[in-house]
Length: 174
Image (cartoon, rainbow, N blue to C red):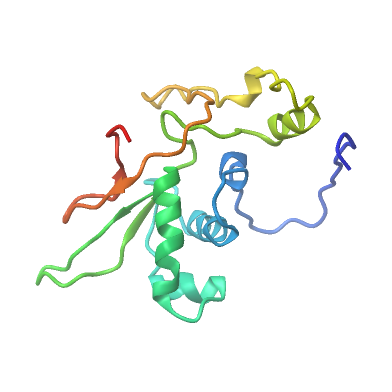
């Protein structure tokens, strides 16, 4: 099937959520990709945040228990696809998590950015790397001070959790 063009057509349209190719092509589990899709579907467009409960995420994804989503959320944090903010009520009790869904990969993202890049890599001879085309790397968003990520082959950084702080990717060397 390699080398055959892929075609599609638009039929009836209803509300839908798009997921970036970089997440779909990332080396994470299908369950993590599904949770990213569910979070993306619930994002408030203004602040890129979603607030579903772990119970709701588990139900939508077909898991029996809410704690089942935790390992897949960790995969998304490791990838840099989401940030998790743990919130507390005025009396100090834990409330729902707030998830910030990232549409662009983090600085230093090391995976393919598009299906075009994927198909080119599949068609390249095995003894040489596929050439990097301009579309392989995400163009810098003028409103995003981070700039465009570079494509490399190193693994993503581990995460570090700190009470009262967002769960973010560690910048410490491995």
